[in-house]
Image (cartoon, rainbow, N blue to C red; front, top):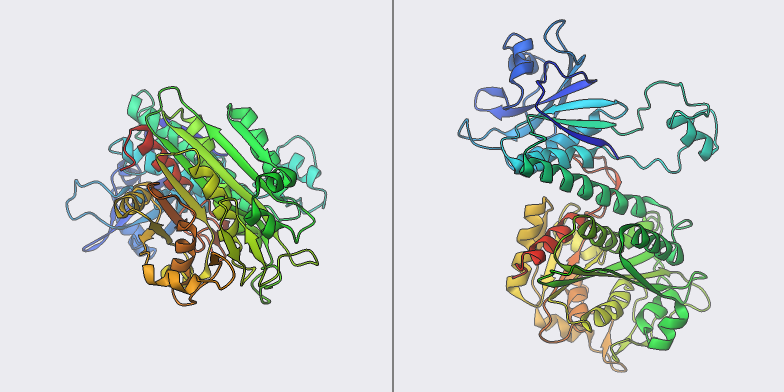
Length: 528
């Protein structure tokens, strides 16, 4: 991951490959944001006018590069990034998310460079955090499967990029490599609040990157067994406790949902419990993640064109994993337990068939009418088990339904809950973290569509409102009195279009920031 430095140095004197300044949309054209004064001075006070001449208007995420003037700046390149609408009052602060997205866009545009100074508005610790987070999140690349142009050997390629041998060692700037060092100018390295903001940003970005890497890893290299092994390795590194139930343990304890989904695959399922505890914890939080490492749809096979990205169906488990590790690395005064329900949904002679009935861990029976509605089956078992430990709240995260994408698009996740106040708390928390969410209802009348003539419940119901039906199904496995929320991240978990802001193409790490912020609230005894 990129290095992060806080510096009181002037943008004019910083030795770097580039200096980043912010530009916003003003009433009469682009205006330079606070932080870029020294750069403007080097342009004779005409930087905003120069940018307007080049077509820059200050729109969100807009990037304009221009060479530095001959005198006045040590960096050879100036990058102006759009912040969107300027505040109505000149001295008003920019919204953290605007800073986060701008810093991310700038970091992406500077891929391949060694060092860049970010001269963006950092009037307080919240702004420092936003700029640092955005830049680090934007400086991401998944290169595990890329070699060099001269060799298809991945080991040689990696050696070349590290400058330790290999044919690519002296090839110059690597445009696929993320920006190596981020310097937040105007921040105070000796200020406790600024320092804490930077340290949190580093942990947060590293764990979002962990989730992204997992989501981007192809299924032939990340099956349930391998996923569980990676959790165990991280637990050992960060002093966490990891317990893994294999197929024999799952069968012994009656996890019919997880086993039913995984029995069509040559790779058996796993249920992983990852726990972090603190001696001074005020509250406990259980996080449950859907971890379908590949989803073919099973016997209810997905149509052509819908299988290619199904390695991402474990994004919920990746988010839970990353959030628990982040809580531990930050030493939060909270007990957080992550439950990762891992399985591969494949068609075969041993696969669950439409019409089969599964006996769940809770004791309920489920008629499987569609084997592609498998995520709710593994989550149901994991939810029941998580609730047995009586946490103060339980939150599940899943790429659960295409219906939620139809409702909310590809950048917003839905929030359902059995408690309206908690649903609002989760929604507000996501906003604080910089993630788009929307509170969704739990209409009781939709439960009738899941009635089964042979079992306690069917795994699908009415097609209309399918995302809500899935949430209502999960609620059946949450005991009365347990505070629960469900995040359907099907839309934002995997970005198939072009990158934007600090969001890359591919795995995004959706929900990690929201879960971590919830853990921080729990550490303050403030889950609501």
